[in-house]
Length: 116
Ligand SMILES: [Zn+2]
Image 1: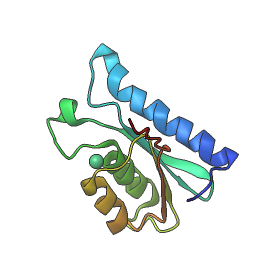
Image 2: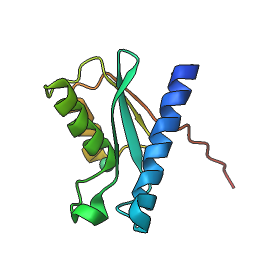
Image 3: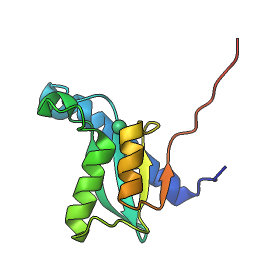
């Protein structure tokens, strides 16, 4: 299990902030409460939130939005060395999109489960 340092915690806060954007954009939800940010060389280069409702697009997840923006910013599909922070465990589509983009590492919130 990876540990979080202060920079990771700050980045995760940005991902959670991005998730709130999906619920608060002009008072109308644009998607589910899921957000992501991408960092490279210690700098945030992209953020994204779920746009499924606004775009009528089942693939408009926050991770995909962030990956698309990061690719535009860097001018390449190859995001080797980039780190994805996401507010929720990525679905299979987002996980594979991150894999195909060569995202080097993914951080997600720690999940605690209690047994009855
Ligand atoms: Zn997804």
